[in-house]
Length: 266
Image (tube, rainbow, N blue to C red; front, side, top):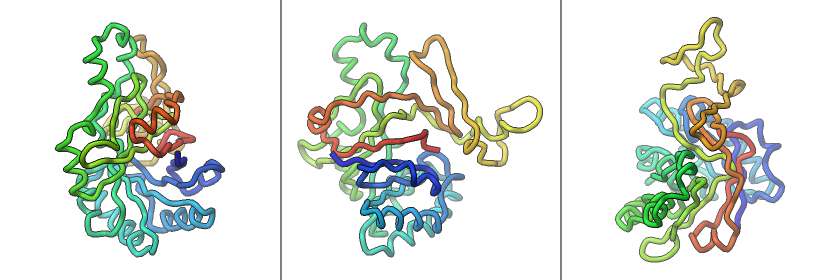
């Protein structure tokens, strides 16, 4: 099982695990946090100096985000050793076709049922319903063929509380999976509730200029219907699930990589 460490900032290289063979770097959820070309090439070089491979993670984007990514992807495409790029936006995945970069389907594009409230009723669900909650779009043959046609051979997967029931490596159009731990991404939005949170006076959710308040401020959210606290970091909500299936079970599902997140990925 290959281990990787996901960091969101260039100054977090000290968080990379000693046994990590790969560094994931970038933003999965916000185009305002897309790292610069200089930052990406710096982390890439540091990873290589340590004998590690490199994966760039990219977020949902508008045309503005695509323009920010263009020089970064162009710089990566000039590297002799192919680099992975995890695309969390179908437009980004399209731009990777002719770049010579290895595309991954990011976990934002993974139609997994993620809400933690399911744990309040999981013991009462029929077997068929529970199976559906543990599957996702990666079990659909036509979707796997769609990914293969676009050069995707690896997909990124969250680790939900209800568990997973995947079979990525068997049948036509096989895939390999990467499982993320311990932070499970529940939802994200372009209307960032963290922006403006450090202003004087009442905090109001709205369309505010990004001051990257998510770099210094986060929130813990609780509610009686939730089995545990939710974590609001920037424009994304997470919860922690440190329980990872054993390697035998992961291998059965076609998961060959574990992506460890030392901190919520913003």
